[in-house]
Length: 121
Image (cartoon, rainbow, N blue to C red; front, side):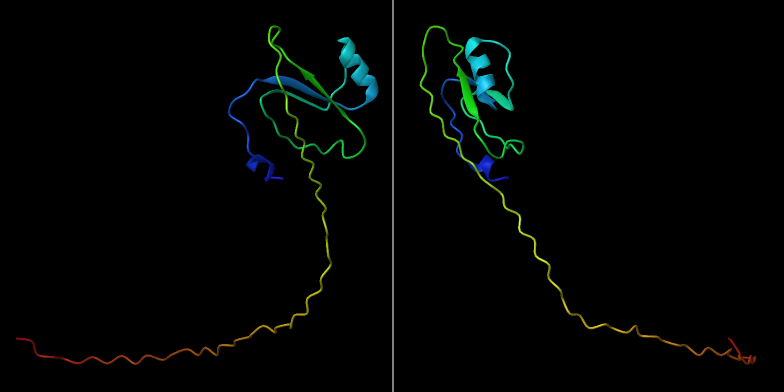
């Protein structure tokens, strides 16, 4: 969309791994530590992206803290923007302009040569 990159991205914080999981069956695989299907993933303190494949229904967000010693606080903010394209057929009335046709009548010029003697000092 272009406007998403204008959102405020924090500079500090703890990074967390995340996965967008498309259905509940894959959520169970995620919880049990098995291989699961996703439609987006990443790792960081903040992220943004555009998804055009999952436009309706329910999805799940899986989070993982890679720090084994210290727990982290995670704030989740998801902004959904739906783009609605509207097309309209508009007829314009324009006057038809006739081309300007220019005809040139060319005739052969006759050149008469005459010689004059001029005294030069």
